[in-house]
Length: 500
Ligand SMILES: [Zn+2]
Image 1 (cartoon, rainbow, N blue to C red):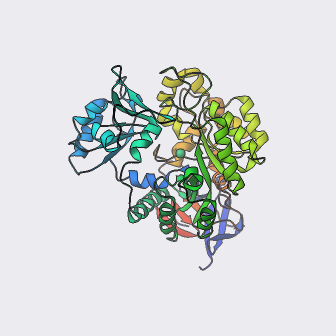
Image 2: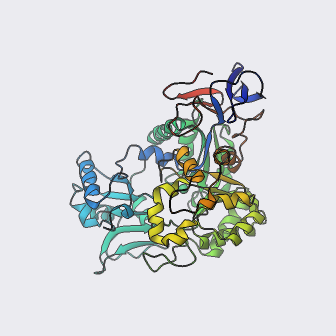
Image 3: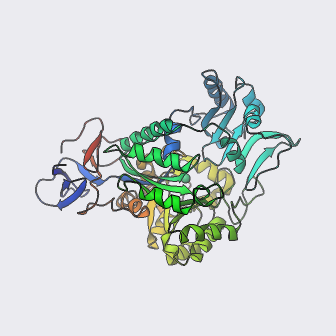
């Protein structure tokens, strides 16, 4: 590739010229004319779900619904359009004006006989209709799976509401996408991410259906020059579980990839659920039900899983939203003897003592500030205003010197990094403003922080790093016209493409 130059200015208005060769920044010059555009390192989304994002883009969505009637109308319209399973996204009972969960009989009335599953916006719960329960082999006699619940009414009958593993029991019986459908879905998600300025994204649970097939789909979709780079964390059971591919095959798979485009970074484990569904493992209880949430594994089991992955040479990233989950995750990381190799995902509720412990351990933490914009009401309903004020202590974690990145968890939320930056720099009403960070800090955590989380050399303007660059003619901001380069390849122009 020939040498090119990207000319612009930095956030202070000083000249910033990037000399680019073979996809890398060769030199950074800070003299000459300041170009018309502000140049920023492109965004890195270090925790999202890429294939599910692409698949969801083709599914009916309930994000705009504000009542049971709205939901039923949307499901009814979608049910008339096809046949077989109907998977609907962005269900959230917290948005339906005190009406609580829908039940399976309400869904049955609009399903046209099709199996229907509404997936909760937080991904940790769902509502199935009767046909979906039947297709998944769940009957009135079924026992709750470990780490999950088939919610029953006062009469003991299944309501169709599914929590955690009970939800997975239904999703796992849905037909899985073909390789071609996966490649198309990943490409769809990459395009959407590129349009938001994201040059590199991490799939934080590869192996929902079939690890090898998913890695093949990611690798193929990422081979297009200029497409969003893909980083992968594989679900623990898909590698080390009884039906997993095994450590040797997993290492072989990792070595077969072109790491610049698509890289396997490590292993993903869930330690608990989510606050909106009252399943994150917390100290204390939820206001909506007498529960302190769900630990997915007992302490000793989690520890042996982490040690197994660590001994095979892999960093482990663990989903831990509640403070009770964070405790046992840190125990497990410390049991490896090298806690600083591992990642803590979400860490929404942290005490000062836990922050000090994470700092001593040197673990990377990634947080999703956009959650505060989308789930604020649900958090207050589940935890009360005092506890929810202190969620996502970005400033405190940063001040402690803990390696930190900001990310989206898309498709749980729409995933525009500028929404995350807004929520991190100007926390919504109801959340402690003491935890706000500056724009420069937020931009860094969305680029260099994310690259660091993935063990990558991107996210900074330095010789030898990827030429992943975002240009905004009017300065950075949500919806601003922009241009993106990934590896020096120009891939996305907004309205008013900048002159550089
Ligand atoms: Zn996630």
